[in-house]
Image 1 (cartoon, helix red, strand yellow):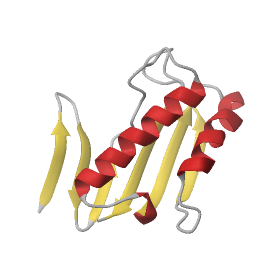
Image 2 (cartoon, helix red, strand yellow):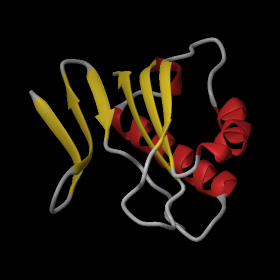
Image 3 (cartoon, one colour):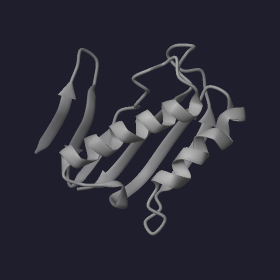
Image 4 (tube, one colour):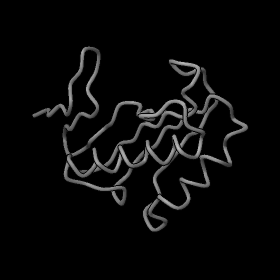
Length: 114
């Protein structure tokens, strides 16, 4: 069985299948904020999606992070390091990429066991 959370016109915010929840790429609600604020907002959205799916960041498997400018790596990590469960680290990739809008500085996608 597949469960889709918050379907929109092009994609769902998350999909649950075979005991795994995978989120879409999540961007900040306030795209005019700086990297720290955008990352904080994104991780809060991820927490909410994981909770809705019946899981938490302790069950993360994979994380993909896209930064508009890799020079913002330290700012993003300053938030990430306070948020992540250090006893249950996922695998992670972080790359520089052009995002869908120039004001978007960070996009994060995760998968976790349910």
